Image 1 (cartoon, helix red, strand yellow):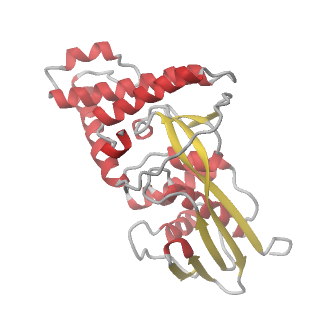
Image 2 (cartoon, helix red, strand yellow):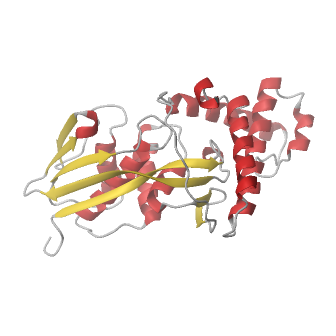
Image 3 (cartoon, one colour):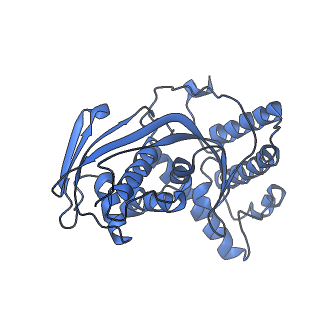
Length: 302
């Protein structure tokens, strides 16, 4: 432990999804943008194996020991799950720490506060571990996704963890493997409005993701070679006999969403993006989310 700093502070950003909302878990590309609001973890080493967490934003504290396995005390027990995931990945801890977690990313507002938290926590743990030092963003994102989603068998994708780990304006592809690229466009400032209407992320993910995946599974069984990556909107009419009107609309909305993302990427890969064209695509993207996927509220629409 000689030479390692006793006090460590890390932070990670929340994000908005400009294009491709609810596409990452389908293996389709997304265009997320990190925001200026962050979640920070700051801690000091202890001489024993105890971990004391101060969570002033929610008026809570947590405490556990790094000796032995960590059983979960609640749903989404991310502080313990990250330790368990990292231990299985080969990280070891010879001491505990006292730390404070503080952030200004709105909670349950669709800006990935939980992923910003978990990415910061994983990054903090890596620095506090016997391994020490910074963790590559790809590994941080992968471990955070395992701790937040896989460990609790939840339905989310990987966009949030990768955006919090890399930051900036990105395009993330998930097929055939994860690939993260920074986009060159300079978009200028965005204004993020908080509707103060809580978002039930898990319910939305379960509803939209499960329905689309089930439809795709059925179509692929009956139509070998069917793929969301390749099918064109004009081809969907041939599936009318296999899908209800609602299911057909959901697939059409998914493909429309995919095509909007592709069109946006063509504009965003160069430094001089056409802001009016980007704005029109953003409006069209929101229309798909509202009218097809049912992911909006009257207040947000107004």
